[in-house]
Length: 128
Image (tube, rainbow, N blue to C red; front, side, top):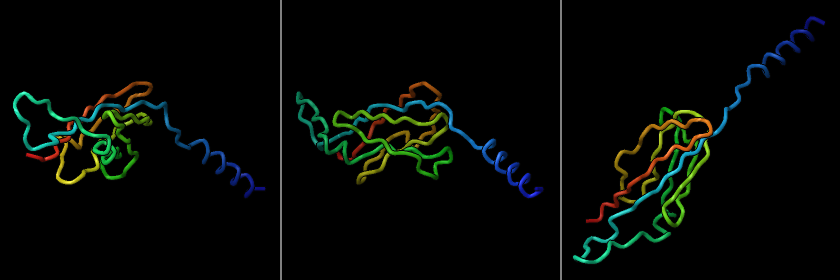
C-alpha cells in the first residue's frame, strides 16, 4: 500500500509540474536582397530579386542563447516571412548563401503573447 501511495504521489507531482507553453506570438518581416548586379547604369532601375534568390535563404530562430535552433521561416517570392512562436526571447539570424551577410544579425528579439513582432532584414550579397 505504501509503494502504491508513493507511486500515485509521484505521478501526480510529475504532471502537476509539467511546463506548458503560453500563448503564441508571431514574428514577421520583409527581406531585401541586393545588390544583384555589380553595375547599374544611371537612369536604370535596380533589378529585383527573383523568387529563387528568396527560396535559397531562410530566417533561422534560435533559443535565447543562440545555440539551439528552434524554427526556420521560409521567405516567399516577394520577400515576406512569418512564423508563429511561443512567447519568449529568441535570437534571429539567416542561413547564409555564399558571401552574403545581413547587417544587424544575429539579433535578440522578444515574442509577446498574441502580438506581432516585426523584423525586417537587409541582406547584402557582397556583389560590387
